[in-house]
Length: 403
Image: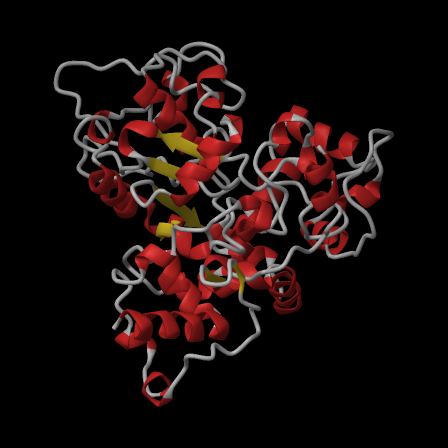
């Protein structure tokens, strides 16, 4: 609890991106991030990232990782506190049979991955709202003993994966769903939680979160509007920066697969094929395209009815309509809150507003600007050397040493 309280006071944790690469076993300490490696020679200076064999240096990406070395709250904080003190590993989901760890980021399809995990576990009501389901909780990284957490973080057989989303689109989707959505219960809860008399416009919402604050976490008490202030570690996880999840800000190279929500249909299948979950589970996943066909309360839905001749959709795949057209995939229609945010960017964003959001989510945009032009998965190592000159110099040093 002391560690959780101490680290949640830090509003803006550092972005080292590749902290594990600066571990020097010979001196049993971390090399200073801004220190120029002594072993750089003339040969190294002439090398570029195109000369890097990422497979060869992969051993440096999943060793000597300890979350207590990070500036973010460590795993397990969600067991003793809520909200700002939740810990960055709270939404790391485990598929033990495939040794796959999925980082579920709010507003980036995390609900579908929770539903798929329940499908793999054999839950009949896997279409239900999965949040707070007990079978999901037992597969949470946060629930493990610390020795098992350390083992998984440093075991090369465990593959870490996540999907990222255009930060501007994700923020607008959050607003359209949580603040200005059609669900009066949800939007009413938002206004009550932040002591707002009326629903703010999107520019007003951005103005609120762009304000600075001085402390975190917030103690129990009356709801106040200043709880909205700040895009930092204390922000609501729906609009907290994506890079504050699962150690991305400091242990980015630990991730073997980083994909884009825009390409979830092909990349989700590719990932499940890579880890051996597609043939056994992924291709058999089915969901009701028409929500009116769902029978039961949203927290306890019956499995979809299948008739002779029906075709299984497959996880995150786009269903084939009877007229030959293709409908929305599960990734297009997030459970219960499809907002079509991508098509509404021009309507809601002015150039000035976009400039503000890019400033607030600068680290998210660093990764997104690289990822959005890629059709394939990138590893965290590849992303790290493209967004950080320090990580690039360090990986060139390691690559030279291996050769």
